Length: 121
Image (cartoon, rainbow, N blue to C red; front, side, top):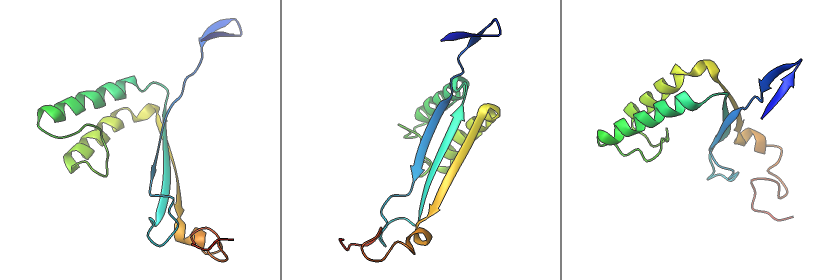
């Protein structure tokens, strides 16, 4: 989409977002201790995407199973390769995270059937 700004032709600014979570929303004793949400934004992710795709094919050609990148599941060399490629394009990349230490959140809520209990109201 194009518009004008003081008589000049301009393009609409597009922001690409990737959002992921870590942990779970299980507030019982068997749930994760932390819940984290991270978002990454870029205006032009195409060079980064091509670099990661090339790296993925390099890994496959070397016999590594990388259907998708997942830091929690990838071997160290794959994680390092992914991080190094992302860091090459970090000038246009911003990341934001929010973390919740679930046991601290639950202290005021874990009574009378609140979050994290099995009691019904």
